[in-house]
Length: 169
Image (cartoon, rainbow, N blue to C red; front, side):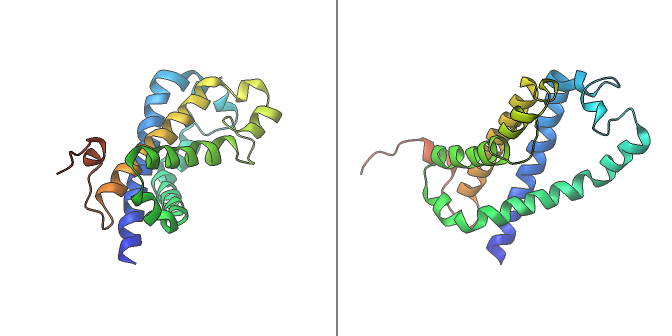
């Protein structure tokens, strides 16, 4: 149980930091126009220019992201031993791939970054910047979790030691 608590707490922090960090960067540089009062996101999402509705977002953002991180940890935890045994880049590619492929592209939800969404949503809902934001977020979460898996949860190897080849004795 201690190992799961350590692992899940790291997954939760990695998820929250990347979700909010990448989301803030994407908003500033890529998707801001979608959230303008007449933007496409404002038609279906709660936005800051709607204070009553936005209060819901600010109240529930952290608790719901903690829950999401816990759910991610619960799904990944059975594979922890295997993931820790892999080299850093294999682990990062696998975890990032899980986020991007299973969490986005192959999801059965009709979202802006899913094959289902590309198939049935109107083009204005499947814009390239939103897809890129989701891919970057998945990749960064894969890197963050891969690093923490290497240095935590009973492992003594650091990710830097995995990147530097060792000389035979």
